[in-house]
Amino acid sequence: MAGVDSTNAVRAAVHSLLRLVRDVARTSSAGFAGEFKKDCTDLARRVTLLSHLLEEIRDFKVFDTSSFSSAWLPDLTVAVQAAKKLLVVAGSFDRNVSPDGAAMKIEFQFHGVTLKLEKALANLPYDHFDISEEVQEQVDLVRGQLRRARERYSKPLNSTLDEEDLHLAETNTNINDQEAETKVEAASKENLSEGCNQNETVYQLETSKNSSETSSLLDENKKPDAPVIPVDFLCPISLELMRDPVIVSTGQTYERSYIQRWIDCGNTTCPKTQQKLQNVILTPNYVLRSLITQWCINNNMEQPNSLTNRRLKRSDGSFRDVSEDIEAIELLIRNLSSQSIDERRSALTKIRSLSKRSTDNRILLAEAGAIPILVSLLTSEDNITQENAVTSILNLSIYENNKGLIMLANVVPSIVQLLRVGTTETRENAAATLFSLSLANENKIIIGASGAIPELVNLLENGSTRGKKDAATALFNLCIYQGNKGRAVRAGIIPVLLRMLSDSSSCMVDESLTILSILASHQEAKSAIVKASTIPLLIDLTRTGPTRNKENATSILLSLCKRDKDNLDCISRLGAVIPLMELAKNGSERAKRKARSLLEHLQRFQQV
Image (tube, rainbow, N blue to C red):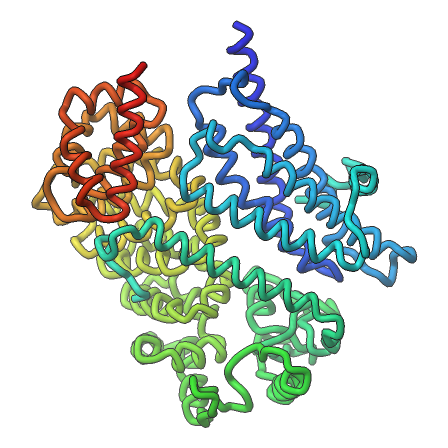
């Protein structure tokens, strides 16, 4: 009885910690400003990434607290609480209205919180909770980022923190809780069958990219003589260096994407002056853009875009004059707002063609402000307009820098609606768009929470052949994020995948196995797979079929059998040992690794 009470206590504490992490995520979604904007953004992102880890711990079947120290849990909870409070204080810090020394105090607190998080994660018993490889790699990434951040924070302090200093940092962070709570609140549509281990490959590509980006940002911050950006070059809304400054009717200049979002939300006043906007025309501020570009060149800073004085930078560093292209594109975008449906359709057809043709066109269309208008056309009652608009957005999203602009235009709700009611081609391209956007880790969370997953599961089950493949690709990528696995299971994805798996004529066996291989680590998915008596079919797939199918079938069996004596007994009785030994000897590298691990589990089981 005491063991049950202890297990329940640990599980409740994990639930509480997960809610705390989600509070930090909500704080982050509101955005930060001021001197510590980047520090807050980085800290919030690292804490938010821990949700994947905590969800796996929460879903773990048995908490045997006698076999490990549970000190990590209160330590991590205290660290996340400190981070949440610090984000409230530092997220809107203004040196001009703060007492002397306040900035140094906050920087000291960042050092303390970072160190606490790093120590708590170092003490967590990962092996006990059978953490998946994907999440383990993600936690390793966060720990590395915390270590580099701690080293950066320690330099200005000219010393490292001892335990007394750490206690002081914690005390300084412990602001009034009530005050804190008040302030908080065709893309490359690759077939899933391409590549032997997409789950690991995609994840490694993204984490290594994020890691390199973080490293470069930290290195940038270490420069002692980093230039101060002139205030006039910062967007009054985002407080970031403007890449596409535009003038509104009051004469104020803003970054196009941010002021467009402001207007799209129904606001009719100028954010800075609070004067009523006489119209919603956004006029490019070419003079300011030129000044920003020149300032970036003079200060050896990366320019905010590759378009300079109506010239587009080529890959070899030279420039191409695109004045005529810009004028033609701006005319097309104006025609998107025409009263004539034929004129709108014609302009949209041309934009769709341009966006498909080249990266340069994708840059110019985004620079000219096409994205918010295209997003607004997704809700048109005209099916042809919907189809061309979503396909244009899909094409634009291929260019990495456009993904953020598309998400900023609040595209996801409209895409989800198209998945429900669009034509066949519209639904296919809507699914492909979600896949393209979900390549960014933060977008996986937003898309997953939008209601997109049930609609994608429906398309996977009832769509055309191409629609099923587009839905499978999007679902695979979304389910790399641990929090989306439960959503997919609750949307009924497991029965759909198992029907496809058992129907060799469906042409979806590869896709089904690949998605199941990343879902099988989730407890609800694991139960559903076992309940459907799928183990015999999976064992057959380890004997026959393409290499990648053998890999994924073995990976699924490994997930089903970890710490599960009944499933180990089942595969042993069904003769899995012989094909597993064959794979361990002659399979691909991934198949060898999975087969050997499963054989080790079987050997330990038989020795008991």
